[in-house]
Amino acid sequence: MASSLRSIAILGLGLLTPLALATCGGDDNGDPPIEPPTTGTIAVTVRADGDLQSGVTVNLFASGSSTVTETQTTSSNGVATFSDLDEGTWDVEVDPPEGFDLDAGEDARKSATVTAGGIATASFDLVDTFEGQEITAGDNLAFSQPNLTISAGTAVRWINGGSMLHTVTPDGHSEWSSADLPTNGSTFTHTFNTPGTYDYFCTPHAPGMSGTVTVTS
Image 1: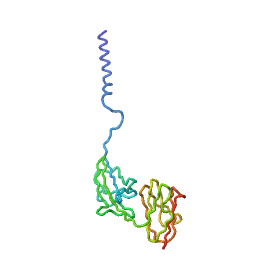
Image 2: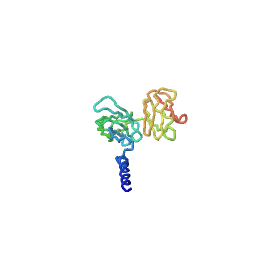
Image 3: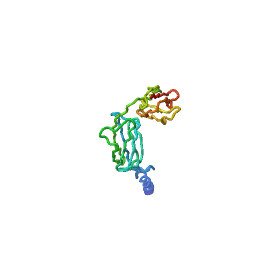
Image 4: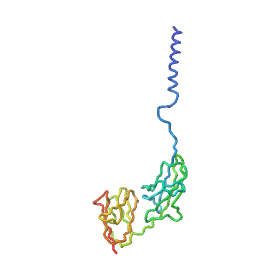
């Protein structure tokens, strides 16, 4: 009887051992293995007179190339981000908006080296050289100077002073094309050379948010 029990116990161990080995053999739960990153990111920061500047165009190039690979615009935090880039050296170039220039000694194009899983950085400093009239589009759904009178040859710059999307859209004329002010600090500039009356509005907030520029000779 004891011999028979020992045989059953040995047989049972023989049956359980492969199962135990399969259970303890690893942490394979069906998920694919985690692959290491193979690409990286470049974050470009743009400041104007020391303040983070949104709405600035930044172009990406392969190192030494003259062909634009990708274009991004700085967000409300003044940063343009290029993602999923192969490892190696890339060039980034800032395109200052109208009314802004590169700061003294600043280069318009810089290099950044991308590593897998890393974030390379570059920064540009601009100076505000605008001379003209400025109109702020605010989150109170109004333009700061809704009825502006200027002389011919004067530039007007609209700036987004809030957090909402605004536009500067011509109303009944084609003096300029509709311009977006997507984020805080975004600007649009137009120089008025021809006397006349130029109405405009904000598309998302019309008809209440509108304005007029009157140009005299």
